[in-house]
Each structure stands twice: as structure tokens, then as C-alpha cells.
Image 1: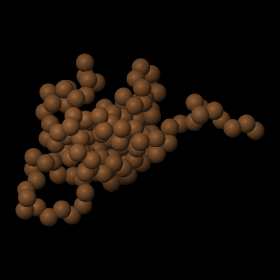
Image 2: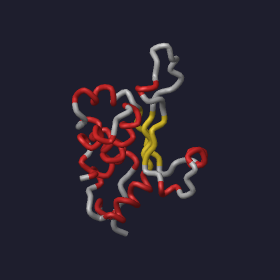
Image 3: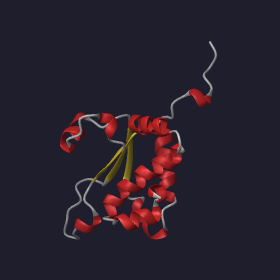
Image 4: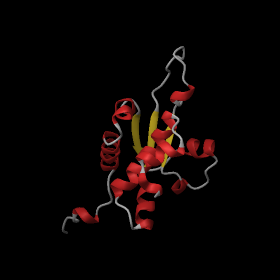
Length: 136
């Protein structure tokens, strides 16, 4: 049996995480350093509790999730109980990537990461559009 070629292997959790960190490194300087404080977690799918909490029936419908308190809602008096996390879900991302067929995996992961980080910063749609040209 021959080894599969690298082009025939689905991108791994580690590759999706690497692409996510690369996306953070391309943010404008004023957002880049604070964004590095957000943990990035990559799983194949969201867990059942996440889906239930969001009212999502199909795990393939959720490519990413921001889990935390947006900076616009935080107070200096707040006790940090856990870090803010951007969750990325590999299988839904790969499914969307394959269905689209017109974007690179890096572009799709960047889009999901920027969208989720936008929730952390409390960005407006205009601010998101200035960084993420996805909508053009």
C-alpha cells in the first residue's frame, strides 16, 4: 500500500490552528497584540452543549464561536474566571471550503477567526469589513 499524497489528506486540527494563528498575526497592530490573549481552540465539531445553548440543530452549521465577555462589556472590577476563547470547528470549516470551491482554506479560516475576534472587541460591521474583505 502506498502512502497517500499530502494533497489527498484532509487538513488536520493542527493545520487549522496554525492558519488561525497566522490570521491573528495579520490583524492591524492595535488589535494584533490584544488578540493574542484570546485562546484558539480547534475541535472537529462543537459539543452538544454548545449546539444546544445556541439553538443550532446541525453541527455543520457552526464553523466558529467566541466564548467570552466582549471587551465592551468588561469592567476592571471583573474577576477573570476563564480565558476568552475562539473555537474553530474543523469539519464544518472543511465542509464549507469544499462546497464553496472558490476560496483558499487560509482565507476561510481567516474569515472565521476575524468574525469571532470581532465579537471579543465589539467591532461594528464597518470595522469588520475594513479588516476582512470577505464581504466585498
